[in-house]
Image (cartoon, rainbow, N blue to C red; front, top):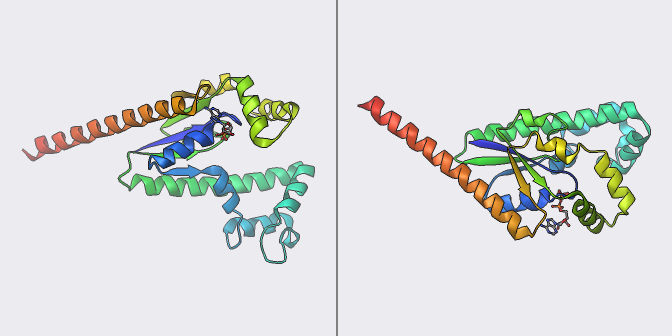
Length: 215
Ligand code: ADP
């Protein structure tokens, strides 16, 4: 079972690829979604948030006041580090649970979909890194369209991330998303087929070894 770390800069098409993988039946761990649920009501993450901010961070219904928290961390670097680190730890714990479950499943592959996979050092936890890449001008255009953001806002967000060239150094596979979604999905299908073929060959190898041992 191979764990693939899927990453890509903002607006590169990572979610598009991750949705396609899910449609193919590949189990996908969505780090952004997990970061959201990591502090939902009843979670250990919410208890830790209360330890950081005090009970003021809770809404009357006991849920986290996410707007209030965002405002606090925006204005205080220490709180940002404490809260961001706590959420990252919670998500990492969930990611390890996911990978543990996957190791005991029949799946050939599973995916960790993590926007900042390399920046956070998570590429160390996975077997392969798949990077979704798009040329920077198209990345700006698509992100502006999707987020109804100005060019300046998008360029600032891209500049805050590791550059595409730097990310490429860590990638085992670069998925080119500069053309049509169909072109992108074909690359994903081919990569999944290659992994399935390798897994089938490895299984056959193990089976023939068992026969030899049995003889
Ligand atoms: P990310 O998850 O990397 O931020 P998305 O998958 O959300 O990026 O893609 C950014 C935007 O570009 C979305 O609106 C998406 O529908 C669009 N998009 C993705 N791939 C393509 C493509 N090959 N051609 C045109 N638009 C695309």
